Image 1 (cartoon, helix red, strand yellow):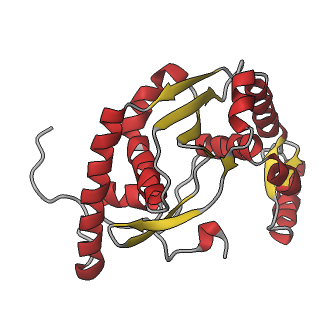
Image 2 (cartoon, one colour):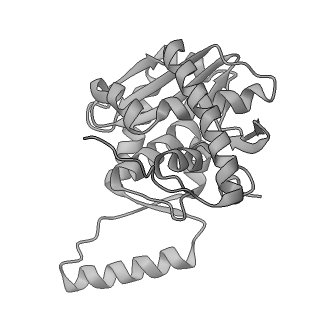
Length: 239
């Protein structure tokens, strides 16, 4: 069973969507920035899969007749070869440059040595079957790779995208497997030249608060599974 196609287990992404909207996501929401992030993520952490599945195509100008024909041919080629990931030369260069810059740093290379990378972990949180796939697991240290346009603004992204909840969710799934995380690090890299990066640590205080939110959310999730999705909080919110 493909990790992403197995819907029996609750994932961090689905859980965070539930916390925000009071229901599970039905469609995957994508954006250009997320696509670039996923591409850099694949190149850095799973280079063998990148080499096997990524196919690079030239940029197509669909404003011209020739461009429109080329795009139709590209669509047909992509449909006939769904196992491949089709990317532009520019995006491929960004992914390569990001990874090259990361691997220039000895500290990053040492982190990857003998680490468990992208391994699916299945467990339970308060009797709910859950799964996660940590980017990098090294002993009792959990590392997550993120891309951004501005490294220094990443601290605000933690709350915006609930990365603290994501890490707390991972910790609880890992704990159900007897793996107790002592430190959480984010490797945050800009997807713009010169592709610089910085490492942040999630404080134990924020992690503890996030773990409480995870367990409270799981209990609400269990209730909604029985009685139906509650949706948005219907109380009046002052703004």
